[in-house]
Image (cartoon, rainbow over all chains, first blue to last red; front, side, top):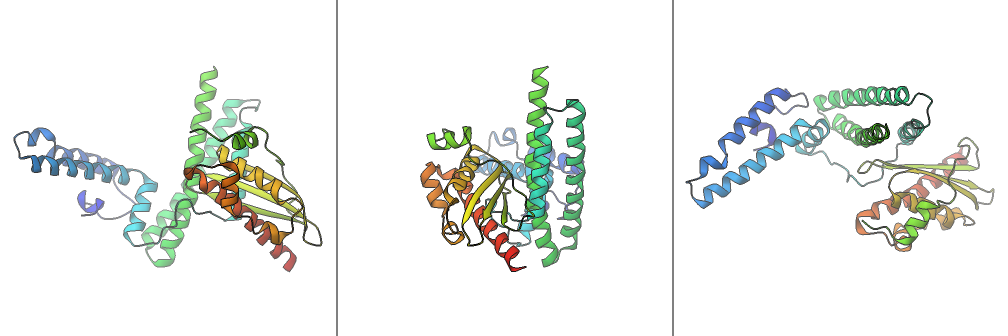
Amino acid sequence: MNYFQLFGIEASFDIDLQNISSSYQALQKAVHPDKFAHASEQEQRIAVQKSAHINDAYQTLKQPLLRAEYILVQRGVDMPNEQNTFGDTSFLMRQMELREMLEDVRSAGDVDAALLEVQRILSSEYLQLTQLMRAQISENNSASNGAACDNLRKLKFYQKLNVEVDRLEDALFDDE
Amino acid sequence: MAYSEKVLDHYENPRNVGSMDKNDPSVATGMVGAPACGDVMKLQLKISADGIIEDAKFKTYGCGSAIASSSLVTEWVKGKSIEEAGKIKNTDIAEELALPPVKIHCSILAEDAIKAAIEDYKSKQGK
């Protein structure tokens, strides 16, 4: 049973997060150890395995990039190894610019405004790429799946940038 | 995780950091990235008319090993022909810097950056 089937929903990038959150609670309740207190050792072990499976499914489905990757892998799309080098020059140039922008925040006259501006740009570019990937995933043909996979790889760079932004925000906040 | 002394040396005193004019016909630019860790590496080579690398600059956003790998590469390629530079293997870089297995991809990135730069040079020459 795949993760979508487990949660009783259609395999799609667009999911109702509230719906899967309540399904998650219900599914976990059914395999809760308390219910198996008097069961055989084997039944207890199966319940623990099911609980872990439900948890993996939930963690994957609720995060957009993991969900996209899961859908593409389920479709049999050949996902390049994460550590394979990515060589889209103009995209990488932009990534470099964004990192330079982030680097300059600390020395900006108005640090708060500079940080906000970087966050605004990042979230708008992230959203744009996500929408593009979403459309490609729903198109579901071999060309669009390949393109979605490419955009998923690009989105990972933004995910990393967002971690850096959070780190910078924490550092700036600690200084105060 | 402990970095080797050589990695720390390159990380603390990176060689040849900087940029060249990417529109200069004698400048080759290689841009590579690794989605897994979000590292972005730019390697630029200034190449003479007879195909010798006269100067090299890099700019890398990434971990210490990625910075050290690109810094080392700029030192190695200077004075080499593009053919010789194209033969530099990630294993040479990893060995020189004593990179642990989890950081091997940083040396692969540096090797790919050289290849990307050479490719860029060839396409510029072909025009």
